[in-house]
Image (cartoon, rainbow, N blue to C red; front, side, top):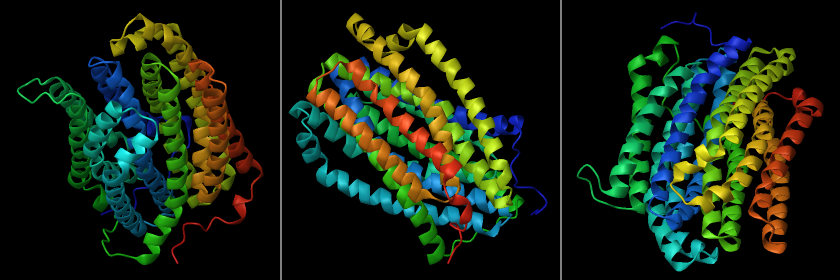
Length: 455
């Protein structure tokens, strides 16, 4: 056991890149996984690909709530690391897992009791509702393992062991791709389950991801090497801290992703099956861009939290400018490739020429939105790092109200084109970016940085 291993972050350009690149690759692998999943379902038919959009966003609502808890955990554990308060790091993880499991089991019960009625009320046709309902009653069990996986990853990032995330990501992706192919099409001696096969494959792969990261933490003995005390005792103050910090973020991510659910319901009601399938492809494209954007968001969270823990408030803005510049350069490269070779991406789905033709316009619009996203998510996570998660919720609420008003007018009232509907992402991420930057520059967060004290 050693106390001399520093837990303070390296805020140089090299340090930021070394922390963020493994997170990016760990996010790239599951996104490629989702892409292959959609591509396999696309070969079953346009209906299956369209339903993958609705089921995927529904699951994303609740998986985002787990991400919210892990985001709160990352901020708290990184603050503790910056303070060199090693005894509080593991306890924070343990109480985060308790919160996550509580949310997961409540969500499973909600899905079993209400998903069929929700799909029907949302205007999904009877065939699609039956298909999606059956899928989600299988898929939702993956939340238990996904939450544990996400929070263990946050623990490793807070200790600046982000490179270890790759083991779980690789294992999850390989298992999911193999089982997707095998269970959807009935290969390798396994049953042909069609659409539901993708659900079983995803749940199994999420269990594998959780198990791999658990073994990495256990076998590396990183907890003992860093002299972090394993405290399994339930502490009401720590539980309340994690829950109160995570709750606004859960609300933020839930309403954010639920608004995407509304978007896909509107797409289902107002556009052709081909355009619905294109929207699913655009969801995958956003996921691919997340290998940069969300990774730098996580890096922003842990680095700024660590700096605050050290008491070096004067370093915050110059560090944020560095993170933003690196992220924008990376995203612009991705955007350029996608716009030069749009058919290379769209052809992965095995659809007809109409799909390729309909997909180019939304693709160009979505890739432009990624630039706003990559800036907004970094500065929004910096707000999280200050402990002002309630402010994050209100920023999100303003963005969501703007977004929902836009898609309602464009899709339900004026019945504008599919491409114009996707311009909603421009509005949403511009609002998020402006309010996050504005709060950090002019807000009063400096006056009270005691948000992570346990009472």
